[in-house]
Amino acid sequence: MFGASQADISHFLAKGMNASVDELLMPGSMPAPPVKNYNDAPTTAGTDPDRALTAGATWVDTTTSDGTVQGNRVNSFRSWWMGTLLQQHRSLREKMSLFWHNYFSTKISAINNGRYLYRHHTLLRTHSLGNVKTLVRSVTVDPAMLVFLNGQLNTKTAPDENYGRELQELFTLGKENSPNYSEDDVKAAARILSGWRNDYAKNSSYFDSTRHDSNDKVFSAFYGSRVIKGRTGPTAGDLEIDELIDMIFSKQLEVSRHVVSRLYRWFVYYDIDNETKVNVIEPLAAKLVTSNWDIKPVLSMLFRSAHFYDLANQGCQIKSPIDLIVGACREFKVLFPASTDFLNQYVHWNYLRNWSSNLGQALGDPPDVSGWAAYYQSPNFYGMWINSDTYPRRNQYTDMLSVSGYTANNFKLIVDHIAYARSFSNPGDPNLLIKDITQHLLRIPLSIASSFQLKKDILLSGQDQDYYWTNAWNAHIANPNDAAALRVVQTRLQSLIRYIMNLPEYQLA
Image (cartoon, rainbow, N blue to C red; front, top):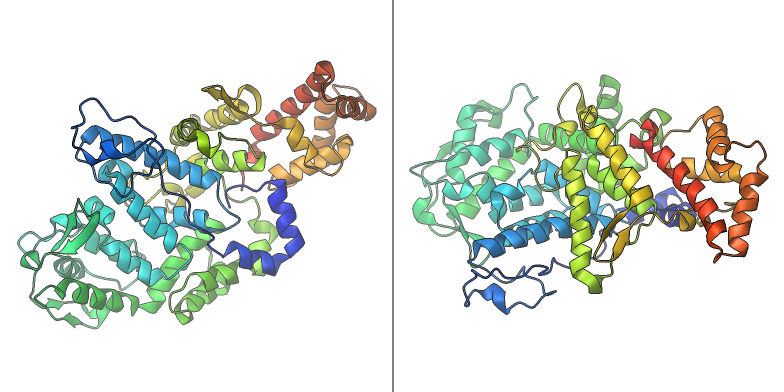
């Protein structure tokens, strides 16, 4: 998940590993759609359908012809998506939805249509724990993808190769195989995919047979010199795409290894050495094939494996900006405005979305069709999240969350340090409190010497006896309305949490 609160951890500890994995692989209910959190611009035509929508109503089923409204909807979608991550269920659905967004990479800024975006991400969310082959087939004619990779411009007289190439190189086979698909295979796939268009008003795609190349398509020896017969009529597009997808997925070894390797780098580590290939990737790939391309059995197998729990695989990822931003809020159970205050809710979600962009991961806008480089670019991989600009910004973010907070419309976004300390078994014991907090927030253990120094310098204010903290905590608990007693423990906890979140170890997942 994106971060875990103490309540989450207690919940899953009580269930045990097998039951926990089962629950995490349940998709849960879908989030409520984004709402109208904007005002119609003065230039909006009086007849524009968006004007009929009241504030707080969802816009996903209503078209608009106004460019300003469209921009507002796109921003609404961006903020809403951050909200779905913050409000996720105890399920992998949101983590997997972002995985598939990175896998079938599109850019919000290029699509620039709120309804297309919502439809596309609903597709990813719906199939996030489902069938890979079904998802590939659905993405192929999805309106947002048809815009992003020029599918709506692909005609028999001017075939566009963008999607035909990425379908094979990025979405199924990968480019590391030898032999692999050829340039002629890209061209043949482009011809099969010709004729698809978008219906803006209906928020859907459709097939235009007059724009489709109805000639036979011949593929290379890599595909066994397969010939996909050209067709005419209204069903030609669907029938030829079905054959194309079946043909690509007949390369079971290549497709399964590619998908599983992407999952491994998302959940475990970027370095896939020969031992990992043989003992982890190959069995998971075989499971994907025997499961008829369902992803859930593969994840179940990975999350129950000894390899997943190996100490060598703990704390070996650098948190992505989204993991850091969303995870911190969830770890501390940071409060957000209620759904009834949706305007303020979206303001605070958008604030965090801007932080993610500033740290190098603009939610919904990967740099290119390959996704974020941290998941594929050798040799640095996750190390690309950290540089001389983004690391100080990460500390600025956690300082904001722990110290200054963010206030908008009389609502302050900030860690409740007292409530966080009280979530542990015995916060009055400084030794146990340091142990509990560092075990919760850090993925690798803090040394005994470092833990002792933290206790002495911060919780004990430089003193040597544990009662300097215990007495202060008990004084606050005995009289929570005493401002002076509150200030003592609040200041120390704030300094402690700020310090821990500024440690390099806090950047590890």
